[in-house]
Length: 583
Figure 1 (cartoon, one colour):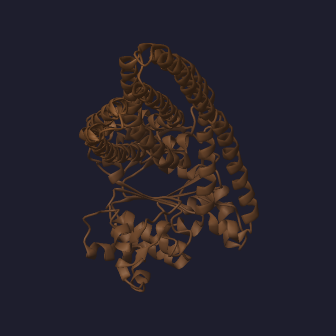
Figure 2 (tube, rainbow, N blue to C red):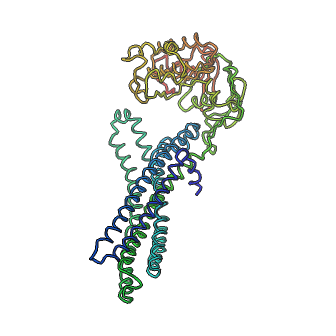
């Protein structure tokens, strides 16, 4: 019931269709229940000497059938409209809620699970909603009307139908209770299957490069087989529904015929006529058919119940990061301060990703950040734009705690070119305007020149109107990085963070980009995470992270004199050797 209450508002905009569907269904059921009654009168009045009864009752039956058909068509049309609208609203709200999630929330649900909920789970709920406003309304109405009509013909015979209902009810309830936990398990395995597909499609180049197709196919087949086994188990349980229904129908028809024959012969047709017997059989079939449809509704509801729980889990989830009421909407400058900051990705984690970070950065400074793999360089910069919240301590931007800012206002002034560069399907122009949707063509060209992207864009077939494929797979890694830098510059931020954003470009272009940034946006605070010492050696301040702690800090000359990790990295790189230094 809590799931239904949560999902009920999603019919907004389609309430009229939702109400009209059962209304027309009521008309269809009423007409269908009158037809056997008219048929009984036709059979009883047929003497074989006149066509008058046939013409009279035949005309009535044709009219009833036409109106019943009209009601059924309208009910189906409105049900389809209402269910499609319900799914649209639900999918929209799920997507909007997902867009509000922090990185922590995404980590909790996983991308593949969210995709499954937005697609498969919503589709299941759409089918369930359509069945709910049609079949779930038709079934009890048909059951009630048919039983009432049967009692109006012969109350003794009608009790046969009433007696079979508890048996079927218990059977359906038992099937539901056994099958529901299995469906709950299936949805979790669907997430794992979807994750395998998403991972392989995204990394198809790596899979092929390492000739791992057979391994990945085996892994996918194993996950698919798990889903198949559970589905098969659940379907075997649900398949028990049909034998129960058929057994009930056969037994009911047999009992009706047997008792009716005794009554007709015993009373000479006074208590029960042949026409009434035919209508009783028809009502019996309608009652049992209604119960069969009810079982179908139960099956769909069984499958959809867990889908509803999963969807509501997303809708009910409150983002770990929220804008405060009346949050600050203006960032004074690009100054940054870490005041005894520690951070854990999970509250119950024993290891801290960052430990007691103390750091002050003046507005307009260029800061270089370097360190070995896993030293939490990316984690450090993610706290600035509040992609995560510090577990302990305070992160300040413009002299204020980042938690005091309106999230939109803060992130508008902190442009981040993340370690994983993402371009979206659309033109180069469309992708650049993610930084500023109102940017003029002249501004686009200017920032692309700063990022040294204009040269290769001008060589594209349609220049800035060239279509990029999803993820930007039709441009090189270095071109993608430069377009992402240009996109960030369009925001005209007070803080610019480059998270290993020039790793795929040559050292000459890297130096040109850094020089352009220094000359064009001198008041913007620039934080550069890099693998190469050459990318950060001219920074105002260089931070060396090791194990989530600041190991060294100073200018290039100071750190070289210190002779620590930075000097070791520098010597290794300049001597032509390699060292594992990744962002």
